[in-house]
Image (cartoon, rainbow, N blue to C red):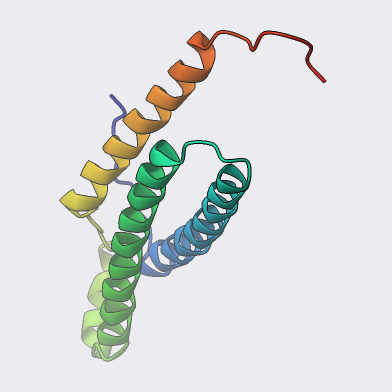
Amino acid sequence: MPVFALCAMSLEDHISMAQRHVRHGERHIARQHERIARLRTNRLPTVDALRFLSLLEEVHALQREHLSRLLSKSVGSKAVSELSAKTQVAKGGRDAISIPDPIVRLALELEQELNNVKLKWLTAKPPKGKLH
C-alpha cells in the first residue's frame, strides 16, 4: 500500500500541481473514450473499460473540486494583511494542504483496478493462430 506523504509545499505549488492533475485527467479520460470507441468498433467487450472510465471521471471530478478549493484559498490568502504575510514568512511561508479522504480512497481504488488489469494481461493466454 502506498504511503501518501505531505511535504511542505507552497499554496502556489499545490495549485500548479492540481492544475497539472486536472489537465492530465482530461487527457486520460479522452484516451479512454477513444479506447472504448475502438472496442465497440471491433465489437469487443467494453464493461471493464467503462468501469475504468467511471473511476477516471470520479477521480477527475474530485481533482477539479480540490483545485477549486485551492484557488479559493489562494484568493483569500491574497487578501491577508501585511502582518499575516510576515507571520507566514516567519513560519517558513508554507501552507500545509491535506489530501481529501475521497481522493485518497479513489486513488487506492484506481491503483487496485490498474493492478487487476495488469494481472489479467500478465496471466492471459496468447491467442491461437498467427500473430501479425
